[in-house]
Image 1 (tube, rainbow, N blue to C red):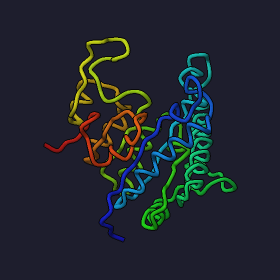
Image 2 (cartoon, rainbow, N blue to C red):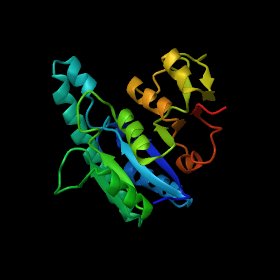
Image 3 (cartoon, rainbow, N blue to C red):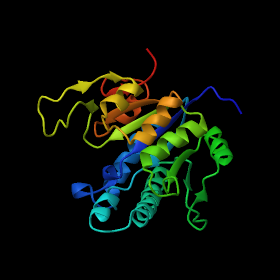
Amino acid sequence: MSTSKRRIILKLSGEALGGSGGQGICHEKVNEVAQEIKKLYDLGGIQLAIVVGAGNIWRGRDAIENGMERSSADYMGMLATILNALALQSALEGLGCDTRVMTSISIPAVAEPYIRRKALSDLEKDRILIFGGGNGIPFFTTDTTAALRCAELGAKLILMAKNGVDGVYDSDPRQNKDAHKFTKLTHQEILDKQLHVMDLTAATLCSENDIDIFVFDMNGKGNIARAAKDFSFGTLITNKK
């Protein structure tokens, strides 16, 4: 079914849902994020899907550095994203939004399995989709999930909502006060400069499928909704001139 509505993928960091130090699930923070997402949804003319990370619950990299096998660490991270997805669903539904959680790992008592045609149908019915479980296989990040779902569902924009980072820099602005912020980059520049906006698999998927990425700080009031129509306050990554 064709639609005139813009289809957008919102990529949320898990840390944005955490309490002190970005750890655990902070219901106050989850509710605040849900309210900001609803502002985006209420703009109208948008079909919205969300990919959520797990950094507030599980950091697979730390586990691997301490001797855990990579696949096990990644599967634990996938389960953690599902916890975040369910928390976000509850908060959005409390605001009157119609939502569906879909997971790449089959947990039928908890959420629907990800099925592309079902996801497209839900989007056409103006439901907010929340994807948990990553890609369902290890060795891939939730950045790759966002890029893959964007390509599969015919979306052309990923809103990469960062927790306290307002764009892409040539070095870490928290460590280098002279770091330069980019306002616009091409996908090839991201790859050539190794800017680590997202992992290389995700960046390549976006480049090959002409998917724009807007990196911005989600912590400002109204920033999530603003990002759908104003690219002036973050970094836009695009192949378009």
